[in-house]
Image (cartoon, rainbow over all chains, first blue to last red; front, side, top):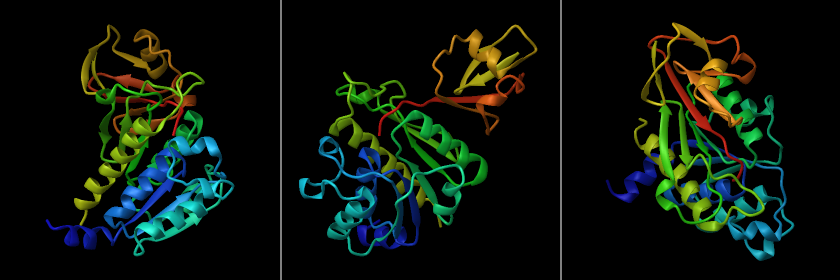
Length: 195
Length: 67
């Protein structure tokens, strides 16, 4: 299939991205480059200098809301993508409203507690909507421990499922971007198989 | 009983056990995880009262901070 046909097909879909940090910003950019029609991005944070070791932002964007900066960066990459942003901290109530109508949701949150909350909410209140989770990407090396795994038709996980972020094992660009792009790759695969 | 745990066959002496008991027997001590039993997500509060039976399909994934 030619890229023009791929792009036309992907333009019909709407993908939700929960979080606009290392996973969310890189995943959103990959999906935008492919031509996914609409991206719904939720985050409540502001860009800080340490974020630039992995997140898809620039030095002149420090201090901006991540959602606003990401929308701007995507516009520079692909004009045709409709980016809807929500400057909100996600909770069990607003998740279903924010991501209603999405064909797929990408979990791109920071803490394990938030990941659990989002997964529980989407899997119980938005039954049938595929969710692509990122888990285990801290540090460097061990490239081949990072995998993408299908749990069932509605749940996928990308990462090594063991590398937790700590002071001595920070998240840095290569492994975070590998997982983010792996999540985007799962999304594209699911959408390409959707009529 | 025999169950599928992350697509691998596992055997237990009991006829049925709770999710919590399964975690203890398998020495799965890491706390942040998602468990699905036959495709249904089991929330943490229900680990004690949810019973795994012969032939069940248990899927588990670990949640690590970082993103």
